[in-house]
View 1 (cartoon, rainbow, N blue to C red):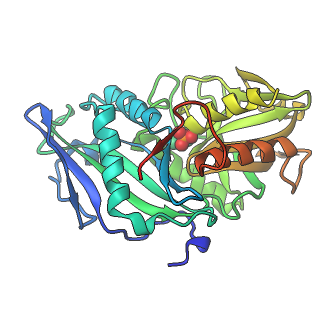
View 2: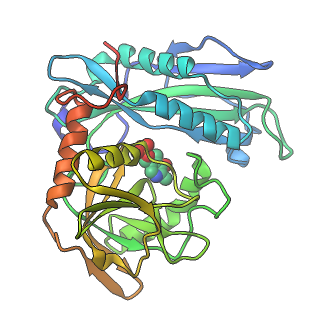
Length: 334
Ligand SMILES: *Cc1c(COP(=O)(O)O)cnc(C)c1O
């Protein structure tokens, strides 16, 4: 298997984890070979979108260990998503144990250090069972599947072009903060339109006023102002990115002021650099944003800005074990 040329797609791995919730409790869970599940066609996950997911990566370090990056934060976020959709919660212990088992069962699919690739873990919770009316399921599945992956946007750390879509991915008090499939279903069409027009993805504005940047469909937005601030949108309808939260800490470590505030779409000229950040996207520099008839090109153009590069290096060095991060950021699996 060539780990240096992976995009973001599924490659079959050895085993995955599956646990069932029945009569008010989760079972132990098992590792299994098949990457399919059989559920009732009446399952609320299918018709009413009662499902949530997570995404995190296992990184191989230079000395051959394998570690996760802030998995407790993924566990906590999954609990928030489950709460929002009335699904039973998963404890930190259960979440971490499932991830640990999946990594250990797929050791030879964890890409080698230096390939820049990782083993992507996809935990999910779905409501299953016979259920015709709109009400929460009585039974649930919690699974963790995995696949080796490379970069999410083509080209890795090379600047991409985004366009602002007129569609919303979430409502002001909807499910934008929860990592649920419904938000993604709503983003498929705008995302497809953006691709058709030659853009890497689209940017969503805040659904209440359509004046400020909310986020990219699968990654949060940040900009570096000309006077040295790391700025990222404050909004109740964006998904709280763990990568973003980490970059805010790293940015302040390197002396940037850090602000979470409205980012007006018509005020982009305050920025020297901009990027999209998330587990899958890592940091993807933004070359330009097209809004209605006008295209704003960031001063960095085809280059990666110096601050973006510095943050990328710090973040990925911590993730791959080359740099000591703040206490508790990495969890060693083996
Ligand atoms: C998962 C996700 C992100 C990125 O969050 P990370 O914790 O950094 O991986 C950003 N936006 C949306 C909509 C997401 O679903």
